[in-house]
Length: 193
Image 1: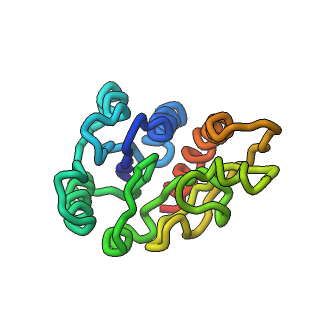
Image 2 (image 1 turned 45 degrees about the vertical axis):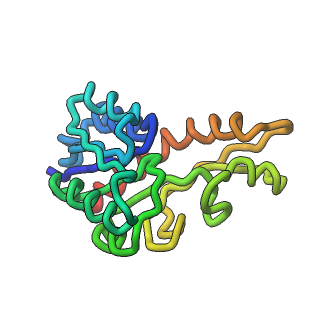
């Protein structure tokens, strides 16, 4: 069985979309895969409650308890590796990962970013798209590399930027597409493993 470990920092809506798709599409039977654990860097992350309700193992590695990114990443890696992951999925995990951590999971680490990469890496993507006068915005699923928001693109979805859009309104439209493309991209990767 291929184990998927999902990392979250907050509500975990993309994690929930993946968990629901795995159940609905019978990934265990079809792909020999299951979500084995959900791990957060924030003890109060609401997504942990959803994971527990689904019977999925949860863990917390609080980044505030560590004095450096390297020591945090080492502890996070140890927690992830307990589950022997075939795939590590970043789903709203709001930490920049060290090159050593990324190298450890090379080819098995994926992320979703709320822009049409390579446009607008980093934060505040929706407001930046509006400020630049973009006609389209969207989301990108990509393999993670040591360079922030780069790596091989696995899937993208575009949504129109509407007249009078706010960053929050645009974010909500993009998020609905994230919930569609992220589970598909994860399933596609699992099929190649």
